[in-house]
Structures are given as C-alpha cells and as structure tokens.
Image 1 (cartoon, one colour):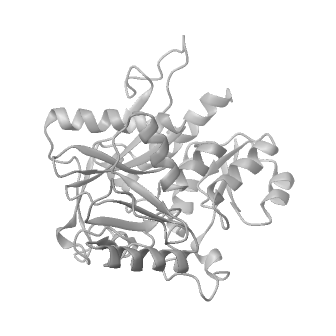
Image 2 (spheres, rainbow, N blue to C red):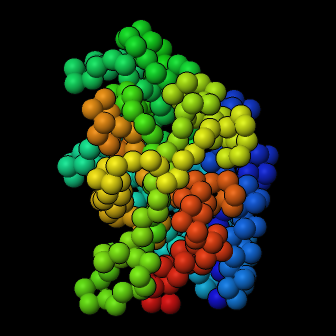
Length: 347
C-alpha cells in the first residue's frame, strides 16, 4: 500500500511559531525520529510510506498523491480542534486512516469536555471547573489544594511550579496566567496527591460475529499494555509532570523514573485497565490511545486525561515504554496500528 505518514514535524513548525508564543509551544510536534521510525516500520512490512506535512498545503498534496491510506500522527497547527483537521480532510477525500475520528480528537483535546463526558458516563475523575474569563465564582465542590492547567494542550504544556495552588489568590493568578499566555480557558481540578500512571491500549471492540484477531487481544477486541508508573522522585518541580520533565529520555539521570509494569495489587491493576477501556470507548476512540490516571487521597484511581494521538517516538515515548515492557517490537506495533485501521475500513 502507498501510505501517507501525516505529521507536523517539529523542525518545520519551528519556523512559523509566533514570537509571543509560549516557551513550550513546540512540545507536541513530532521529532524526525518518530517520522523516520514509522516509515521504516511500514517499509519493512512491504508498504510504500511517504511523508506529508500536515499544513495548509495538505489538501492539495493529498489530492495529488492519492495515498491508499493515511497513518495519522498530526497534532494540527491552529484552533481549538486542531487535532481534527487532518481526519476531516481525509474523510472529505474518502481516504482511510489510522486512529480516532474527527469528533473524538476534538473532544479529547479539550480536557474540560473530556471530563464532562467521563463524569456523565459514571467514570471517576476529580471535581473540576472551567475558567473562561477568570472571574467566575469558585465552585463550592472544589477544595484546596487545586491544580491549574490549560484546557486544550497536551504534553504537559502550561504546567509549572505554580500549577498547584493552595489559596484563592494563587488560583486566580495562575488562571490569569493560563488565559493570557495560552489564549484559552483554564481547567481547575481538585489536586490528586497519589501515585501517577499511564496506560496504553490498541484495538477496537469486535463487531457482532467478528472472528477474533489473535490471542493477543482480549474477548472484546482490546489489548491493554502493562501499566506504567511515573515516579516523580526526580522531578524538576516536585509533583509536577510537565513538558520539561517529559523532555528527558527515560535513561537520562535528570529525567523521571518509569516503572513498567507498575508495582500494584492485582485488583487495582485490573480496575485501572478496565477503566482505560471504558474511558477510551466513552469518547468513541479507535485503534490506539493512552490514558493517564492519578490516585486520590483514598488510593482510588481517577481519570486525568486521554491522548488519542499518543507519541510514537521509538526509544522515547510512553507507548514505546509500555509496549517494550511486554516484549512488543516497535515495528510490529506500528504495523498492527495500521492493520487495525485496515480491518475497520475493510481494506
């Protein structure tokens, strides 16, 4: 198959970042190692991959190249629903692609909307409130300490030493900083003091009568990788997992420690894995995702956020750590993501 790898490459986006953009504005965009790794894996499976930059030229390049399929890792460049731009173009041109669809990406990038969906689905997530102009009365359901972050960013963007707030003055100051620096609403949620985890999964729920793919998948059609614990003991800012902390390779002495599989009781492991699938399906996710958790003061897991475009950088990203811990080869992971999409489209 001729497969377009659709990405926003970090070195390309760098040239167009506004002078007044936040210092972590490039955090979500793709390193060359990611794009090259995906292409190498697809090429090794006999496909013909080629890179298409997901910028304003994409509509024309898609029409000119007419790929058989898109392998989508594009974060998007502008707007509140930027992760949905590439899926929208692909659907307009009837080109099948990997990963979730337009609405799922639009919701998952908006942390407030994601938490509303989860809450209404009966899933556990900390109390929260959205601040749009900064003067909203504080919801009495929230108690200090609280955590403040941008509502529509990923990769730990907009999180710093002032994100954990202990009084209303600090809360208002940090909310104002988010509003002015990131030009978007701020999400304020009850601070969760417990251990922090991330969980990756691949797969899609089997359709009625569908034959199982392999023993790798459970009876419903999903494979949940071992749970990874993010050990904050070496965090640059205590208890804050932000862009700077995520920027170190796992083996770097200045970085965090990652324990995978996490040392957890069997019942808590199963609970977190089950919640991962429920959180994914509540947003109609497809093919792959990564879900983040923290434990509350009582040790109960609470959903924090979901990444429907998880990083796929070999030797570096959480999805690599999670799959590698189970002995799953990177090239196999990439090709399996492609095959899950092919299965959905009947390609």
